[in-house]
Length: 374
Image (cartoon, rainbow, N blue to C red):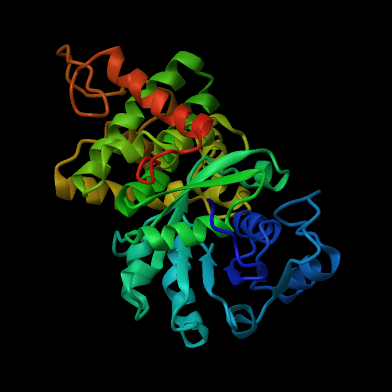
């Protein structure tokens, strides 16, 4: 029998951008008592009184019960679960500001998909470093989650990951509505890196889309990109199955194919010839993929992982590679024929690739029978 959520469970969401506001809506619709923290008082007022966030979710009516404030102390007062959705590079300073108001037993949940540029740390690692908190009370949520689609209540799924299965399940029970289904796993490394790395591949897809290349090019980059993602994540201790799930393949597909993706859009502008400065100026919100390229390649180098697609993205960002030249460099500069490595690191041909897709679709179709299979 499925455990019931205690009605009115007090939660806070820090960050009123498109994803933070959308997740606050999910939690409110799921029955929680939600307070959303917005940095700007005028935005908090619009959310509470007008039930709108016109800057980030135009045209979306927010739930009646969703409240917002620009005061951290009020947002965090009594919160049993705290969902953090701020730009990854400002997470540390936001945590320092929030710490005095956090309940001693609160669960802290990262909604972010990035690595800290100065340290290379994942978001859960930054949380563990800044806050005096048991790692078992930290979690991360990831998956194919384009905010505007979810705000429109188009069905999707995500995975909640924590080293404590009990923590993941407690969070998943709250973040569960008729249009948003959460699965659980305990592979935090794979779940977080999946969310980070797919952004980089999405930038590459945007670049070739902006150049004018077609579906063959994009399918090749997505497929080889999944290999790079898995090699990297496994080198840092992830389970390869996680990269074949919602936080890896699922998120990769959604981010690469959608014009709603900021990373895809940024890449497309680069492919059309805009400079990185122009792209940054045009983007209304933080594009995590652009900020993560350097740190990810440094981490890859430390483990001896080859990431040719991500390296090509870095060169386009640096202006040393013309966007139209990204496509021929899908795997290696070597002219020698190579075996096609699938995500399990072996050349098993179509069987392994089909298995990857099948596991992802089975999760969506059959309700995630395994607690460790997202």
